Structures are given as structure tokens and as C-alpha cells.
Image 1: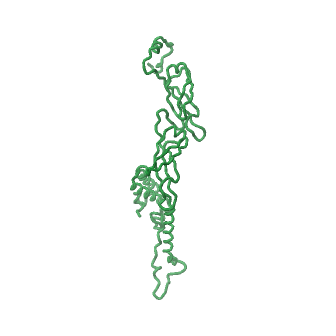
Image 2 (image 1 turned 135 degrees about the vertical axis):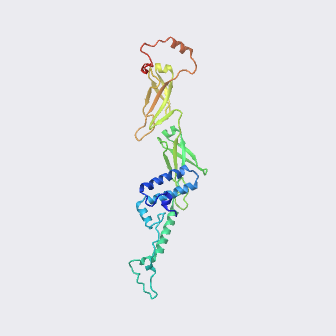
Length: 301
């Protein structure tokens, strides 16, 4: 069994903080999520994790350093001394008694029991967890959805996405991992969700931001128009004299949270017709704004 200190690349005198830093450094390069399909990296990651589990526990580390347990955490058979073999030819067994070292006669039984327990634990051990990434649309992350995921073995599972899920959150599907090598339960499937960018919506925490184009007439005269939200379009009142950059708030049209929902913020953008409009040009040519009107007066020009 490989020495856990050697696995982590630290000295036997390493502090707990040095051990923790060494483990994190190795985990960042060996984690199965970063090495999909690489069995060698997966095996090294498991070995490193086992070494850290042993050395990060002060009691286990002390017992390992003193030789009481091995690198797996299993008890080592206690060493037998000369007194256990020193009975004389005349039957003089001066070193044996009900106290002291007499109970070493049962060492083999103890070791056999340890092996039996290890075998029983291995038989009942759960299968390995499997890790997947799943890209979802922003509206599905906000409203919730069910999405199918095809596994490498061809099996298909339905992933239920809770409303309000955040980018990078992990869903655990019990029993959808690898089968147990013995009689234990199957492992779990760990699904890391990534939210794909949306062409209309931007999410900031539990709030949603949308840029909404409006016509010149709607900006000047005001209007009732439809505005998109992740849960569907809603009617929005554009006030008279609205400018590009004006922000209107739709309360409760954002993502779900612990209590209530976030809001949707609509940023207005005045957009002229894509092609020249003779009527509009004629109107603007005859329009004379008031003397106080100068859109650039605050720029010092």
C-alpha cells in the first residue's frame, strides 16, 4: 500500500494546513470531472482522497504513524514478542499468564475477524457515483422543467430541474450511478447544471434584465405594448416621453427565491425604422424644438 505522505507529496512532519493545501492542489488536476473517461486519473484521485482522509484526521494519523493501522485505516496485527515463544522444553511457561501477553494466542482469530469485516463492508459497498454536465435554457432554470439525459451506456434518464436553479448547481439522482461490485446499492448520478446564455434575458441573482426596442411614436406618445419575460409575455405601459435607457420594473416576474420572486427590469431602447421614412423626415424637418432643449448640454459642448 502506497505511503499516504508520499501520495500527497508532503513530509511526515507536515502541518494540517500543508496537508490540506497539497490535497486541494492534487484534486484540482485529478478530479474525475476534469478527466472524463481517464481511469488512471480516477484511480489516483481515489488514492489521494483516501490519503487525505487518513492524514487529515489527527487520531487516525497518530495511529498510522505509530504503526497501529495501515494506509487504508485497517488495524495492523500486533507484533508478538520473545516472551510469547519462550516456554522451556520442560513445560516451564514462565512468561505466560492470564495477564500480560497471553492473549496473543488469539491474534490469528482477531486478524481473521478483521478480514471478515473488510469483506463484509466490501460486499455491502455502494457503487461509484458518476458525474455529468447538462446545459439548460435560462427559462427552464427559472420556471423548472424536465430534461432527458442520455448516458454513455445508452440509458436515458429524466432530470427534473427545480424552479430557480442557479448556474453550477448539482442535482443528485439516487441510484442512477454505477452498480455495486457486491450486493450494495447503486451509486448516484451527480448532474452539474450549466445555464446557456439567452438572446433576450440576462439574469442577475433573482432578477431578470431585458432590453426592449420601442418606436419613436411609442416613446413620444406612450403606449401599451407586450414585453417578454421568462414566464411569458406581459403587457407593459410605456410612459409618454420615454427615452432610451429608461428602466421599467415588472414586480415578481424574475426567478423564484425562498420567499416570493425576483423582478424583471425592462430597459427601453428607441429604434427608428430600418429604412428612410419620408413622412418622418418631413415631420422632423418642420419640427422646431424649444430653445431649452439640447440633448448634449450636460456634456459641456
